[in-house]
Length: 419
Image (cartoon, rainbow, N blue to C red; front, side, top):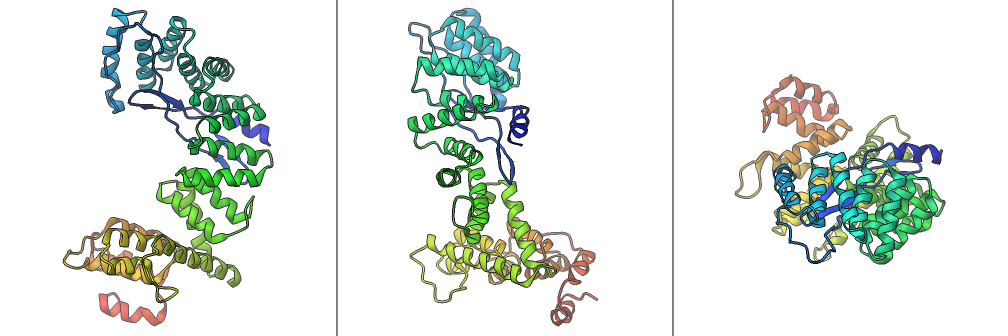
């Protein structure tokens, strides 16, 4: 099974990002993580510059905007024509060509740079990166090994060599390369994330969880997601559903879709009437504990009630931006009081501000209403019935009204004129 997953990883195309000063490390092949599928790559920026002295300095034409790469290429072509032996210009041209997707031309220029300066570790590293993108893993590993031979401290070369080794099926060598990367650059969360996946794959769950946490704290959303999975299943850590929710929420905030889907699935289970009551209560309690944990980031605030809303408290403390952010976090964690306050803010605004019909609040209502959260469904009934920030739509309002319990149905129908 692991071999098949490795073959799948071999087929995934690599992308590359660029820093203002030069070519970054390539995104590495996807690494499988048992029980969850495969993991998208993470970026790591490195810098490639010429080591050769006595050459004319190349023009500073490396715009951060990738759309400007095409205009940069013509200038670099002129420089290569005027100074055909200028290694730096060749390398910069290769970078720009890669940026527009011309891998063959980028490969030619990278090879030319190595031929001009065979003792340049960074030239070999750049050629290795381009070969990785061409999925020529064997040739890439040869160039990257030469890069680390010439410069054992070249962090990005060790990092990419780990990916090349993994793609070639040499897990042991890949682990060694990632360990060396971390030794050279301890504050490299992406390398810790990659190493964690391989340690998990080789049955070292405790070490994997520790490295995943380091990477998660460092802001790698994939690591946050898989650390959440580890806490959910008790893989290398003690099982803790509320911490699973916390890490998934962090990853979701960074836009990592699998984490959003994991939270949505959990909310649906908590709100579904066909779920065993014990299971529903376990999930609801996990969300409740997560909401309590949010208070740990605000030790200056006083909580007088265990279920007091952090978002509302922050609003009362004149912190509107943070207050709304926390209200959304609590509402996605199934807080009825937070949902009610968000409904008020959506319809009325706050203080002297007019109602702004905040799109983030509307999305929260739509998401949680679809999952079965009654307060969000009731809020959407009002929004569509009154046309608050959206076109008035009585059919949608009436459709949502079907989910409202009988004890609330008549009052809401009379208030909104829905019959």
